[in-house]
Image (cartoon, rainbow, N blue to C red; front, top):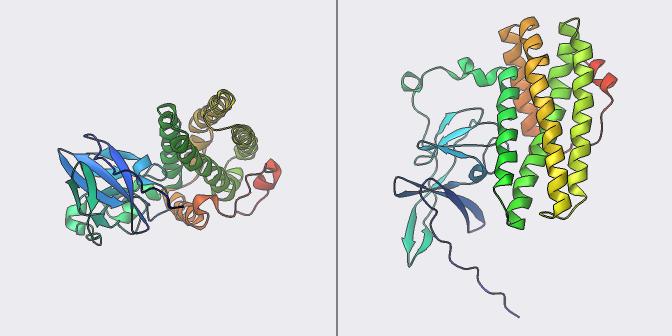
Amino acid sequence: MTSEAPPPLAPPAEGEMVTAEHDGAVVAVAMLDGALHGFDDTCPHAGCSLSEGELDGRTVVCPCHMATFDVATGAVVDGPSIDGVKTWPVEVADGALVLGEPRDPEPAADEADAGPSTDDRPETDVAVLVELEHGAMRRQFEALDQLTDAAELTASWTTLRELLEIHASAEESVLYPRLARAADEGAEEAEHAVHDHNEIRDGVRAVEEHEVGGEDWWSALRRAHEVTEEHLQEEERDPLPLFREHTDRARREELGREWLDFSERHRHARGLAGEDVDPRSVVEGSG
């Protein structure tokens, strides 16, 4: 029995993206000002889907760590990624997308045109990285609310679930052991934050118990969203300002590099169990 070929993929609407498979690669295709732009869908920094991110002018912003790429050249524009993405010529034939051969990304603009050097970018400050990921989580929850297709819901939820665990584990490894030593109130703040992480993990497990898109699934997702948002707001109000106050910029940038290394090692939450963590073990960890 032979399987039917997938139907031809129509071009995206203006300002939107679709994904296409071509010779084993997943390609994102964006429509901007009436022109089509094709580029690798997988962010080279941590493997997230660029089509789940946002178009900003002529750039695409990764939903996980805010890596930003020029959709026409594939070059890195901003954020933590070192490598650009390949671009793909795109045409429309008989109403369907047709992809050509990929091209390697162009190098980033030279230092004179690129503005601040990499070392001066705020993305190297671990506190800013934390806040950027907060924004990515919020956008991913919002994106889920706009979806109805079970396959799209599954893919979007998987991206969010992985980001939630990578983020929590990175804080427990990189940020909170240092905060516990940096300020008198640091240990208390760190323990409370890890307790919140465990509540978020409980929420994730509750979502996973139900069929994607069902009433119980949506109910569990809304509860996970509420618990996560409460934690993000509290973290932005108390621990992060305290950490900035008691940690100089050079140290925050050093920890930011540790944060990015952690995210790279645990891409797609690889090696992270998603199980509850003892708050005291984080406070007493090395730092």
